[in-house]
Length: 260
Image 1 (spheres, rainbow, N blue to C red):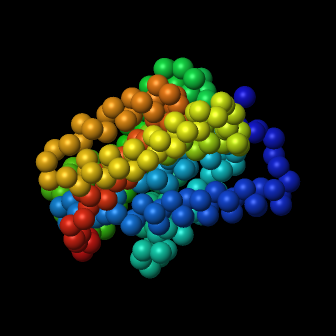
Image 2 (cartoon, rainbow, N blue to C red):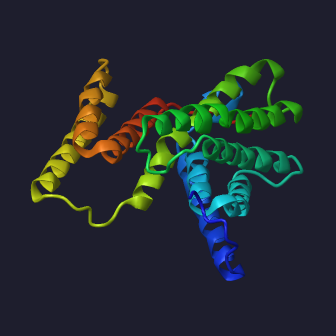
């Protein structure tokens, strides 16, 4: 059974809402550390709150919606004064993850991601399809309010959509797996040594491959394969997250200009 359908006590519900809002806000502030200028707007290459929202919907069910909306409100408040158009932004940032949750539940998505169909569903339904909503609403509001020229809609929309989708693909499965993981993880002692060695290699290879003036990103693929074969999905997700964050930092080193 996915999510808890029983109504919790008011105090428990309030704590859950605060937890979801705080995690969403923290993820939003982390995502805003790296921005990318597209046309006359600034977007984030990876938007972690989208993945956080989808993960919490599978943990708490639809009662996580108030926390998602509240967290999105706090992110908006940290960027600009409140206006009536904020309601549209909150709707888009909430509706996208909710759509992902409902679609994934409809196809029998399992949070342990034990089947190939679960990964395919997460990418195509949870990320690519559902995040069309948040991107369309967000960029549409920029155009309607005159903050973005009409001819810039599609480039900005594409960047917004990709950022939200990447947040779901990278963050959601990682949070769902970490929730199910027992600590400390069980396993023979030699595997701890291997995990430590792989982490050290990743800390060396990923920055070198990303920062090198010569195209060396191909060096990351053997590392991902190693992590997937030896540590399954959890290991490959951690390596993919490290590689994505590092390459994003490198790609956004240039100065960004904010929307008018």
